[in-house]
Length: 72
Image (cartoon, rainbow, N blue to C red; front, top):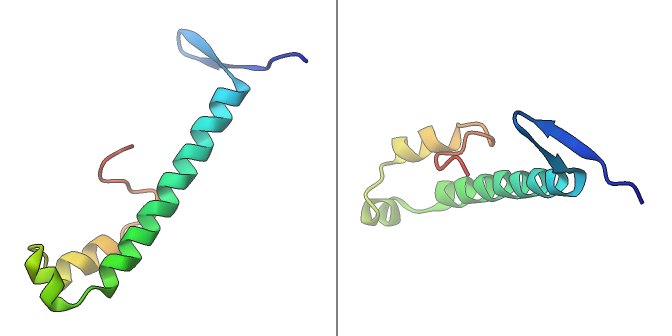
């Protein structure tokens, strides 16, 4: 079987490596979405315990799924 290569500036990566990276990124986006939904379900007392306000949560939950604060 012939291996497909994808060009990147200065080097090449295999198709399977590219696919793995894409799969990982989609998984990260799904996790961000779940985390934000869970954050929205926390009570005001729980939010206060972790130092967040309801407006902080609202701001975080309105971010698009691809907006990763950790840029993973």
